[in-house]
Length: 338
Image 1 (tube, rainbow, N blue to C red):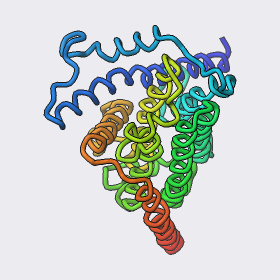
Image 2: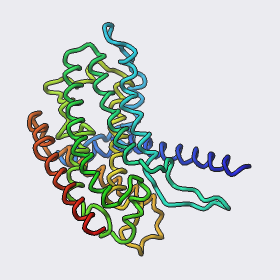
Image 3: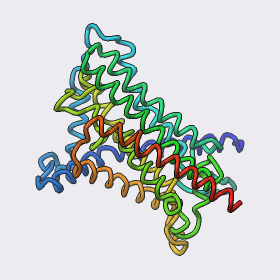
C-alpha cells in the first residue's frame, strides 16, 4: 500500500474518531447540565430514566426522532429545511482544525494528530463561525412568522456584534504567537503553564470567553430564545429532529468553542508542567474542554438574563474598545521585543 493511501486511511480514522468524540459527548453534557442545574437550584434533576437518570438524554433523542416533522404551509420550505444544517455543520468543520496531539508514530509512518493542519486555521475558524449566523437568520425568515423573524434578527445582530470583539481579541494572540496556525500556536505555549497565552493575553481571554457565550446563545445572553417574550425565537415553527438539530448544534458548538479556547489560551494538548508530559496530550485537551463546559453551565444557571440593550451596549461600548486597546498594546510590546 502506498504512503498516500496509508495517510488517507489515517486521516479518515482521525476524522471519524474526533467527530465521534464531539457527538458522543453531547448526551452526557446535556445530562450533566441538568444535574448541575438541579444542584445550583436545589432540585434533584433527572433521576427516573436509568440509574441516576443517565438515560434521560437518550430518551429525549428517541422522542425527538419519533415526533412528527412539521413544516409550516406558508414557509419557504427549502430554506426552512436547510437552516438547521447551516447552524449544525460548521461546528464539525471547526473540530477538524483543533490539534489533539503533536505526532504519533505507527511503524514507519508518522501521523500528525490534527485533521486539517494549514496555515490560516484561525481565519478559517472565524469564517466558519460567521456561517452559523445565516442558519439562525434563515430559520427565522423562512418560518414566515413574525416572532421567528424577530428572534432570528436579534440573534444575528447579537452574533455579528460579538464576533467583532472576538476577532479583535484573537489578533492579540496571533501577534504573540506570530502565526495563524493552531499547531504553531500550541507549540508557542510549550513548557510550563506560565507560558500559556492566557497570562499575557488575559484581557483577550476574558473578552473571547464572554463573547463566546453570546455566540453560543447561552444564558445570560440567550436573547433569541427568551421564552417569556419570543416563544423560542427563531425555532418557534420547528418540531421533531429539526428542532433537535438546533439544540444539538448548541452543545456541539459548546464543545468546539471550549476546545478552541483551550488551544488558543491554555496550551491546547500541552501539560501544565513539563514533568507531566508522559500523560497523552488528548487527555489534557479533553480535561480542559470539560472545565470550560462546566464554566458555561455554571454561568448559565447562576446569572440572570440581560436586557437586549444591555447586551448590545456590552458588545459595542465595552468589549470592542477594550479589544482595540489590547490589540494596540500587544502590537507595541511585540514590536519592541522583536
